[in-house]
Every structure is written in C-alpha cells, then in structure tokens.
Image (cartoon, rainbow, N blue to C red):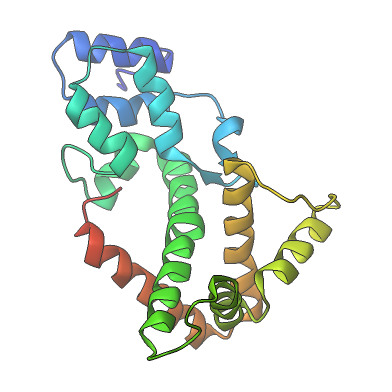
Length: 211
C-alpha cells in the first residue's frame, strides 16, 4: 500500500522528516502528492520541479540541512543521484513526464543557446564588441530568425500585446515556445544534433548531477 495515499504533500513531508527518512526522496514523494500545480506548469505540460520543491521546503523550514537544501534549490545539485526510474517512481509517471518536458523544453533549450553562443565567440574575430549582433546570430543559427522576430511570433501565437520586459515565468514560457518552434521547423537530423550538443554542454558543467 502507498504510505503517502490520502496525505497532503506537506503533511507527508513533515511526517517523513520526523521519522528521520532521507529528505530528498521524501521531498520528491511529496511532490507526487501535490494537486495539479498549475502555478508551476508551462502550457499545462512542463513542470518547474525546482520551484515547486522550493515552496515545499519552505513549509518545513529547519528540518532539512541548510547547505544541502541550498545546493539543490539554487544550484540544482541534489544530495544523492537518482536514476530516471527512481525519479519516476517517486514523482509518479504524470509529474515525471511533466518534469522531462521542462528539462528538455527549458533547461536543454537554454543550454543550446549558450553553447551556440560559445561556438560563435570562438570564431576568431567574429562579431567582436557587438552583443546584440552576437545574440541575433545565435538565434538565427538555431531558429532561423533574430530574437525580436521570434518574440513577435511568440506574442502573436498567444494573441498578446508584445512587452518590453518579461517576468521569469514569461521568459521560461518563451524558452519552451522556442523548443516547440524548433521541433516544428527543423529537420530531424538538426534537432538530434542540436539536442545532443546541448546535453553534452550540460554534462560538461554538471557532470550528470543536476536533476
């Protein structure tokens, strides 16, 4: 029988911690008990797991080792590494799949922009001194348009008035939109190549420790 069944997420987390159970698996299990977290979803399909975990950690302040908690919430390094099947078992299939949507649609997509910029800057003498020119070329190489044109497409699809600045949530929504736009517009070989490059970039810095 699932010991968490019928318990609220915070209640389950508090009880698990009071029993001396490891906090990280207990936290992920608490996430699985959450009602559909609309505030932490993009397009109702990509789950911002770290932000949700941060809220739950705030409910049990002082019960989780501070350094481990900060390393996880602000640097993405959990106290123990779990494989995909272990994460899936703790989060439940629905939230695990939503987390994967976030990972590939936001985290990996951001990495693709960064690694493309890195490649561009390594070109001897390329675009020196013009940050806007570099940014536009990065987005053209990945998506075929400069960033302003992409923003206009983004707002148009949402029937919204363009904004001069974005909230963090809107910035993540834009990144997730870019991910889906790339899947629609690029060839399968280019999608595979770009995704592989972005994952290798993450691996180079994270050593597989981020969730």
